[in-house]
Structure formats: structure tokens, C-alpha cells
Image 1: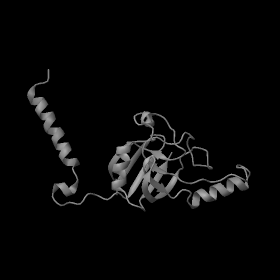
Image 2: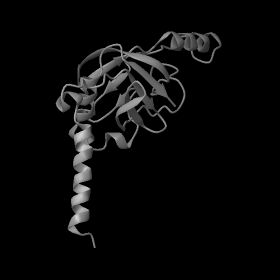
Image 3: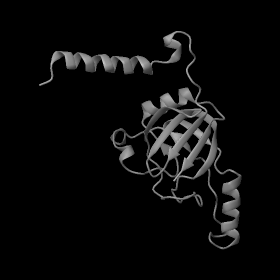
Amino acid sequence: MVGWRTRAGVMLALASVAFLSVSGAARGGEPEPKVDRILVKKAAHTITLFAGDRALYETTVAIGPGGSGPKRKEGDSTTPVGRYHIVSKGPSKYRVFLGLDYPNADDKKRFALAVKEGNLPKNARIGGDVGIHGAPPQREWKSIHKSTDWTLGCVAVDDEEIDAIAKKVRVGTIVDIED
């Protein structure tokens, strides 16, 4: 049986954790750390925001169902792999859209080589419009969208999560996407 002292200790520990998670500004002038990198791990279905080596925020994501490896072409529903940057922030039918600079120079080289070698059709397109965004607008998807990979290559989080992420990042933030 758990006594009141144990419960009180647990409550004190929880209160301490809550206090430590309050922003630096609320603690007396320390500025909140700036997010300088985002890491998306496709296999783990996670997104983590970093300030230097310190993880500030992590949550689960939905990605494209195209599987591991880099995005090969438009329409393959694969979330790309590589180093990108946030190049735009704005409203979207998916709440907020943080646009990435896909395709980057590495993607363009890989795509051109695949077309040249005949691994992709000559009329294939590389695609674009890849980003980090919220849930689909349909109400029935709001609570289940992270239980399946459904995007066309983007990274999707809950609406409340994209609001929080968008407030913490700026245009230019590095986004590393790994298998």
C-alpha cells in the first residue's frame, strides 16, 4: 500500500520536473535555448528538436509510406533522406507548413544519375513541396494520423505539436532526416 508520504514524494518530484521544464525566461531571465537543428528518424518515427547537443523536444511522426532510403522521384511517397533547411513557414491546410529545401544539390545529382542510367524514366520529375506539418484537416484523422504512414513524403505531427515546433524554429534551421 502506498502511504501519503510516498504520494507526497511523488508529487514533489513531479513538481520539480514541471519546474525544470518551464522556459528560462520564466525562471528569471535565462533565455530559452534556440533550436538549431531538427532530427527526423524515419524508422523510429520520431522528430527531435536540438539546441546544440541538448534535446529540447521529441515526439512521434507520420511519414510517407514509400519506405527507407532517399526520395527517388515525385509521386513515390518516400520521405527524403539527407540534410535540409527550413526555407518557409506559413499556414496550410495541414495547420502550419515548414517548407524544406528539397530537392537539395545531392538529391538533384542522385536524380540526374538515375535518369541518365535508365533507373528512372526520362519524363520523371524530382518533385518538391516537402515539409513538416500538422494533421490532415479531416476530423476523423486527427487522433489516428500518426498510426500509419500516409504523407506524400512530408513529416506530420499533431496540430498542437506543429504549433509548438513552429514557435521554436526559424527559417534556416537545419533538418536532418535519417532512415
